[in-house]
Length: 185
Image (cartoon, rainbow, N blue to C red; front, side, top):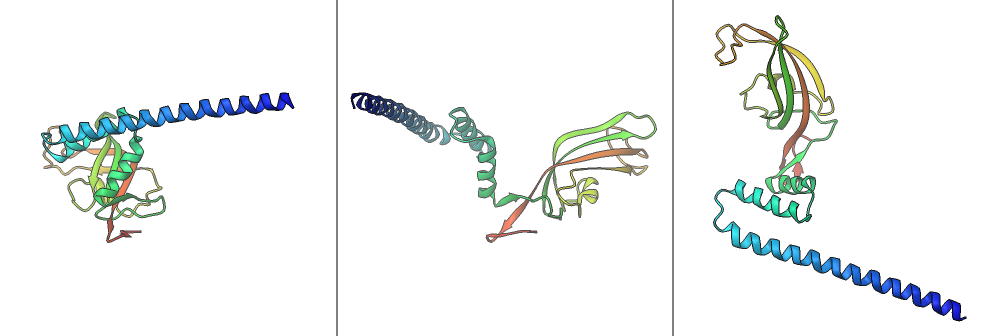
């Protein structure tokens, strides 16, 4: 009987210590949150544009382990009214893509164009790559194509009249959310 009382006391002591440690951790988290809140209030008033404010908020939240970068991006996308598209969805005008691509001169094998995580808003018709992305399934991550630049194409890279072999990788595709319904779903 004495032995079971002794074990019971040990268990209670351990639980009490665990509880004290948990309370201490909760206090630390609360202090970090309060410090973050004070920092935001005192510093956001003089920060310039909204992007600067968001970057500042991200830094404070990441530095204090209050949120992961992925969770923050998902939350911010929700505020902006956009969502990440699923693998089986088609890429359509109005979508926002991030792509990595490489364009190699077919004659010289020289890499003339190379970008990582390059942003493209489909439908803006500002980049020829759009025509190769439209209608693709988001899940088709990589593909290749050739593109010939017009003879009178103006660029500082001397691309006029050249044919480049492109390898394109779709990093991420996002779309707008319309009135609570998923757009293009």
